[in-house]
Length: 154
Image (cartoon, rainbow, N blue to C red; front, side):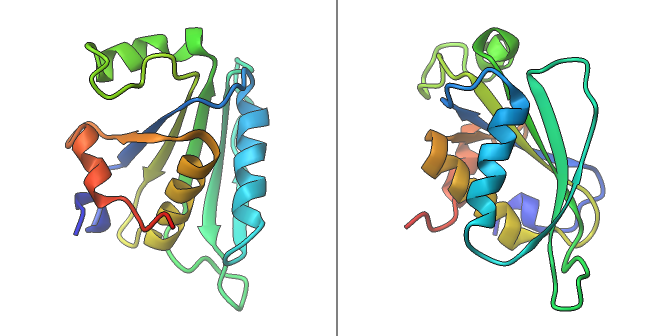
């Protein structure tokens, strides 16, 4: 069981380094949401922002239950696009490029809060990020070892 699956007293951030070819966060987020909405359980969503930069976009998401309610705590999904915009984060996470993330042009971040994280939605987003943009996961606690808890991506 991964650390992020337990009770969360503090916000947990799961980052994904991606090669998306997008310079606008809104465009990248819309592409990701289109993929998520194409299959799986229906979602509830709320746009976040506006932001002072075209490179950033965010929304809150939850899996929608049969009565229209959120089945678990809402999560936040942030997208930061543009290689110049994210370069510092890439260099900080992987200064020697041991994990092949240099050249990434997008960071997607899932932020979990609360006591009932939406594990199924996290796995769904993770799988979509890998499918769309060959995402490499990273968090502040486990670093790149967090990839050992990847969902079944078949």
